[in-house]
Length: 380
Image 1 (cartoon, rainbow, N blue to C red):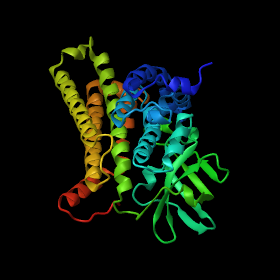
Image 2 (cartoon, rainbow, N blue to C red):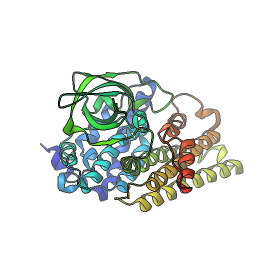
Image 3 (cartoon, rainbow, N blue to C red):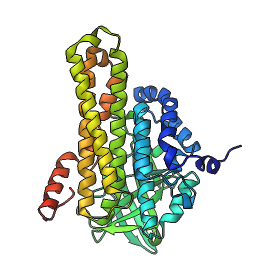
């Protein structure tokens, strides 16, 4: 019997994209059903976990595959070409691992234990969608730590996760970061995810009913709503991975359109030729931007406001190109793609979710302009 650790040792960063290409079609067979029923992509998580895919971003010194942010991003891109919900949900695990690998390389004492747990099979989730700027939930001081109460929204992959990273606001107004076991009896998962797209991600709410967090489990402190270096670290890992996922969904829609149009009566239509050409331009520009930001940020970017802006602008641009691709793909197929459940219709709905990931499009531009002018800015 092959152990998880044995499999992890075979999936290194350099062949992660190839593995994603092989696993994507296996996961894809479940995506339509989960989209139709609004259920969780459980089969994908089990396959990816057992394959060691979810541990490849753990540094090799700690038992993982040593994958870089770029290698993870392009692997999620390949996965998303076939399985958008599975790719987006697992991106939330992957970026938390990458951020903690950065922290480990920069001396964070608590990061090693978490990364070793991931190498052994622990699955992570993030409440970043609701906590990134001004966190929800309160942390009240008690003997030896904090008692945390509150509700967190958009926790993608919650049914499969063992641990969720999150923030809460203390009585003094600071935000503290920590991890919470989703198996804690004082944590409830509220199965309320019912959205137009990304329906298989199970991005449910979780409720914390007075969960105790020991002082030593607090990993960062910041002021809510304003820039802090930790936010630059998270965005430099999360945003390329998330935007790569949406770009992969768009590529999958493009490939489906081309396959269905080739050999049809529409294949000779110059207008169709032009639209497909426009699709390919959007996708090529998206890939150039993604490649550029991954190269520009590197594996160990400085935790500065400039890093935050670079990652945010790239996310905004890549997702805009992906959404435009979805619109044009629908134009090529016309009414055939309007039926619920059509692969292109599903991709179109999934792509609508992209701009809702903080930092949202309008706020991104305001922050970028403020940083360029050396002015203060808020993240709300």
